[in-house]
Image (cartoon, rainbow, N blue to C red):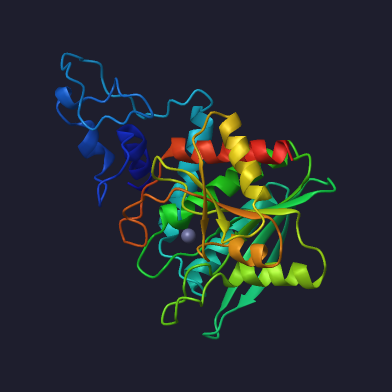
Amino acid sequence: MKRAILIVVVAATACSSPAVAPPAETTTTAPAGSSTTTVTPNSTSTAPPPTTTTTAPAPPRRIELDRSDDATASRLEADADALLTIGVREAGTAAEAETADWLARSLRAAGLAVTVETVPLPNDRESQNVIARLGTGESHVVIGGHMDTIVGSPGLDDNGSGVIVLRELARRYAETPPPITVSLVFFGAEEVLSGYSRDFHHFGSRQMAARLGTASNLPDAMVSVDMVGIGETLLAVTYLDSDPTAADAVAAAATGLGIDITRRSRGDISDHEGFAREGTPSVMLWRPDNPNYHTAGDDVVRVDALLDVIAIVEAYVAGY
Ligand SMILES: [Zn+2]
């Protein structure tokens, strides 16, 4: 069921998804006339093709980007399954701790050096940052994504998508270390804490940025990967008028891959904020058009959308 949810969205390749995705079986048994066998991955068409004579059976999945392969797609789907199985991951709860534990254990099993730091919350609970450090180069870039959700949302896009992107990067860097030092950070407690005002958020990233700032050990750049699994529009967002160099470089990496990206400047909407305030060039990668974010319906992501962002971060790190 959960695995099927991911496949349905890839099959649809539509700009937006229904509020509640039907099971795959329902979609794939639609009449022949609604077959999607001729739809291309990035098609913007909203109607079935006019030709209704195709009799080819629907493929089991629709993952068709040239650089994709079944093994990669299966890994991303397995991560999506794991996140949906845990479900709502509110900061400071057992579910968020279970997520952190899953991440730390699996990264260590892949041979990576992992640090888990405790993040005290004002409600007397604790969150965590899970940090995997890779590579040995002089330059140091933090690639982060929050693992928590708001109350009531399974948060597969916000921000399971960032978690899935970081996990795939970890697997690739475990095989081939990056040319610079990369910290992959799964931040805790990014969302506004339930029952508190809107500034009570970004606890994990603000704590890490402040710690590194106090130690005069800030990274050279920071990338927050937050909500990148749904929507055609991809943004490279700076925190207000902070140093734009990381955003410019990430946007250039995307453009070099032929992926459309737009530069924006926004307020404190993700984990890049704390690092930007410390003076680190920081950027958020964000697809802003998911109508179901922060709802119970945030249970789908698109594999091709994730693959684009994985490729962008890889290219940015490779060219640093
Ligand atoms: Zn988020």
